[in-house]
Length: 429
Image (cartoon, rainbow, N blue to C red; front, top):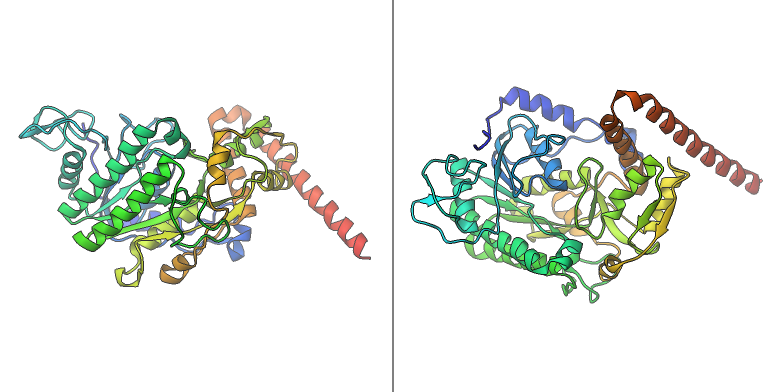
């Protein structure tokens, strides 16, 4: 049965939003003066439907929207039967199972339901599986959706292992979402990716309008999404907006199947003291952004006045770095004994075709993109978040040992920094 997307009281939502908005991200020292985070942008009011809500970015956006004032309700959807018990959705957020690739014929007057119990979701009889457009239209109508956040996608590395599935999920899902939005008058946010660029694009500070000759099915389908979104905006009046994302870093809900996943997975190895095998070469530079900055950017872009936007898709990034630079920063800032073996595989060739950095000047100028976290801020925050997550998973018995280990790592890092400063001072004298 469909979990109810309940309407939250305005005072409670505003209080939750103030708490979320004023909490500084750990390790924000290189990105936010004084350590305090500016308020989160307030998203447009309305009723939100999110596809791919149980993925890495989905969890982050659902949490932010659930605390935002003016958001009447949220219907989170994903192909999985239900959220994991270890990662429940916020209170008041509804959930429904939705497969954007289901292409069976629609039977007149019936459907296989959007929720877990099929036809009980929105009324009517339960029959055979509908097309993606029918499912999405049904979900949007039943939920009175005003905004669709379309996150469902097969990522780059996984897409190369199953290109047919990536084509169906990414291209077919984007088309279904835009069709449903055009029919129902809903706005759409759907992220794109650095993978839309290929070797013809500049490697450094790649501009928004650089040639798009992607080398992966993921990149091909996301370039298709960008063009289809721009077409839907121009010809059908859809309010379509997109961020062309770099690798997204987070600790709580790791990504799956991407070429930049190493930069998330390495933090758990660093905290556990395990040897880490990196599937990219040590000098393979790529752009990244912390999930907190991506959420802020998403909300800011969605809230921007439409007349201020000069394009439908904007590139953004927080920092560009290599695996070797990330390892060095981790060792300097809390994991001095981190051991890494570089064993490049097919994902290194994928990364080699992407720009090392993105020019996000248009996003800064048009709607105020301003990432808070650079490499050091990301490392500090993700180390702290990973330690907290693993400590909670181990239970109270291991809490004291984990705190002692964290204190030892911090002391070692401070000692190394003091020694470096002393040596520099002696050299200057």
